[in-house]
Length: 114
Length: 114
Image (cartoon, rainbow over all chains, first blue to last red):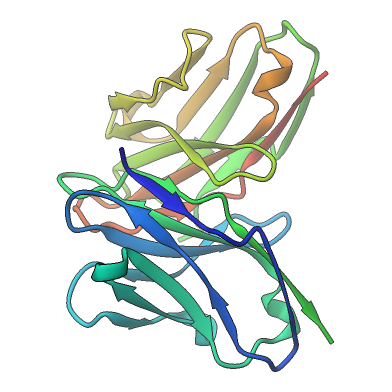
């Protein structure tokens, strides 16, 4: 069965520090991979997506993610975190073959210290 | 493009009552999805429409749940005889009809069953 694992429930970083959020997936075929961010009272916003091609993808707000097939991972990174990045981050797998039903991880809550 | 809208944003009800939520997708999107998100978890897929046809329902969608999308525009999700376990955020998303169509999420309806 398809699944997504985000090993870190909570992460705290200092403003200006670098960030890496981990995501591992289990899916038999070529996955479509997504990172979404959810702020309190807000809907899910797409940060970036990977379908094929270059394994390093750039997204909005200075985020990037790298697809590593050998490790079944799609980790999200940002070189310098801003206080406004505090939110919950979700990794998701889109099932190929017709439509994008998304399977989400449980999320990582990011806190940013000034 | 006003985005995906959901109504109401919050609903408090007593156990045993029926509730209905509405989702208005982005106007040109013919795919519409419902997800449920409980506290501390990522969204879980409930059901999916292409135009007015409901093409897949998760086993999470018990017979107390029914979703419709008349005329392929807005959608409603009804929960009959609500239970405390139904308390969650109900998210709606829409996308264009293509395999890699990005899903745009609404702000969600938070249901509390007392």
